Length: 177
Image 1: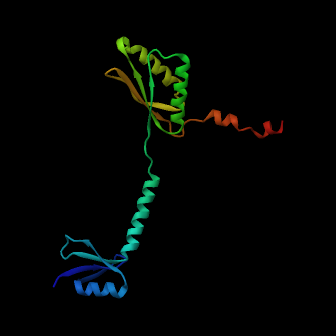
Image 2: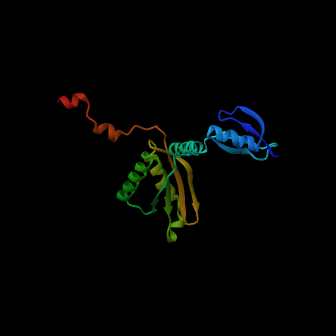
Image 3: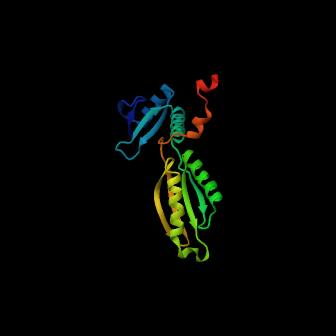
């Protein structure tokens, strides 16, 4: 006759009982008998509503997923011979990604003989870093990897004021005029 340590639904110890007696008690209370610690001597079983237990577990898992945030890394590519207009478009794109809270991987691609002048790439990237310093920090400094130079920018958490948005909202004095 096999014996088990029986635990009530609230976690209190009932004691060591035979399996038949534990099953009978579970039937009387209309609960399930769930083995909690099979390796213990004697094994530990608990009286519980298993369906309710599974539901609560799924609710907790859903809450944990909802509260967790995934880190998104966006990539913007540059070239050493980029024009001023194109640079400005890409700078605004980097700024937008940082405002949305995404990390940005900035890639400077070198083609042909451009790779012999990495200082041009460094100069362009440092110009970019200066222009977006209100929105993000350099997380990984620029480094050469083959024919490309990469750097990672991280957004400043709550550290910047979105001036464009604050300019769009008129004050009470402006509305009265």
